[in-house]
Image 1: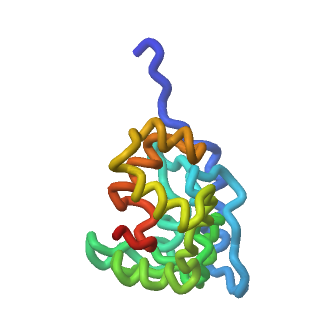
Image 2: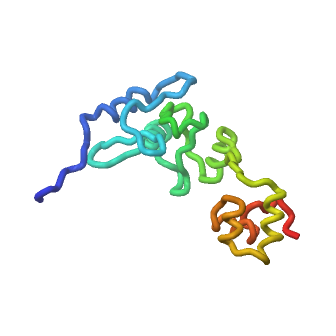
Image 3: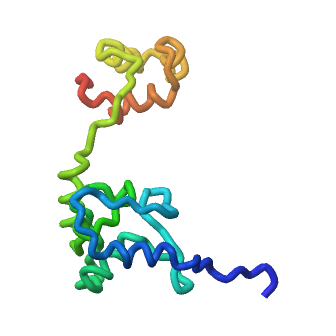
Amino acid sequence: RRGHKPPNTGKGKAAAFLHEHATYQGDGCLIWPFCRLHNGHGNFGHEGKHLRAHQYMCRLVHGERPTPKHEVAHSCGRGHDGCVNPRHLSWKTRSENQAERNIHRPKVPRLVRRKLTAEQVTAIRALRSQKTLRELAAMFKISEGNISNIVAGRTWREVDRS
């Protein structure tokens, strides 16, 4: 077919790397040295298929996934860095994997950059019956959308709406 390119199967270096390191005994992460996806996981072509390096390594060392609901878990919490250390990989259910992930990478509250004080938010809510969104936005130098969210209680929930 014109314009059709067969899938890149590479020279087998990526699969060879995984087979060579299937008995890796190091405690530290074994970082994938080839192509990675946007999420940091290793990716390679093999036998006409696109494969994930950590999944391939887990199958190689631990066999096929026990059920379709199982996925590869990283005990190191560094799957996003491309870790393929066979000692860090195991099959876990989604909930088991997420629980372990939260141990390694707890959710950190987003940094909030606020232009307003709690007193200004209270004033915006008090003035809303007398002024338009546009007027309030101009007064407090924020967008009409922010004013709308404040008045509706979608933002600044912690400030009393009385």
